[in-house]
Image 1 (tube, rainbow, N blue to C red):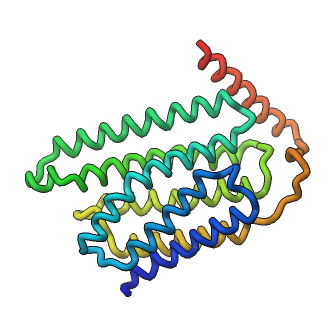
Image 2 (cartoon, rainbow, N blue to C red):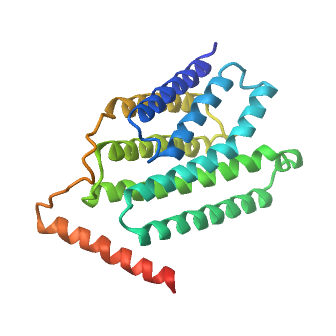
Image 3 (cartoon, rainbow, N blue to C red):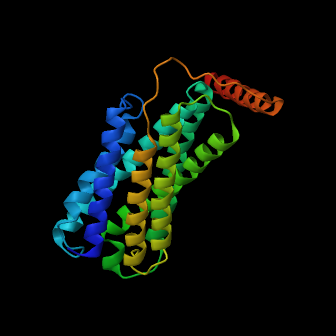
Length: 253
């Protein structure tokens, strides 16, 4: 087994542990897509670890899992956004629309650049090139969306439970690590760097294990009660309410 195979197997095992913790704490109803995202990492990691990077089987596993990964990444980010802004339907609706438009726009630009750039005909017509371009466009757009989620979590005193906050933050960090890997790989002539991918798998495994370790049982005592200790926090919540009302009215028009 190569070092790369070992690291993706370790990352898959870490994902299984995180899924088990989320299920045991009954968070499946809150984060069903997030569980699917982690499960996909586990399944594809185990499958890919048994084959060489240069084998046809690995190529087909990678080709098959890429669109699934992109779809689950989009839906998982949307799910986290919806949970974070559960009390603000206007903001939720606007965020959902924005992420779809941005991903479509970024994908079209990437494909247009690929078609117009010089290169060997066999390279330009290879389907993997377009799969990789769409994947990078999707991941980097979702990463920007996730940065907004992290900004909201750090700025606004939102009424969120411990496990929801931990899952939102750790998923964001995990995904941003994967986006950073793809961004760095983009500067490689072959859109791939063995050292970067190895480091990214190790980071993903550590991040997922930390996620699982920080989850804890919470008493089912109803909605989380947050006491606002300053006028600044009340002002921030008033900003969110105003933005939510504005976006709600805009959606109805």
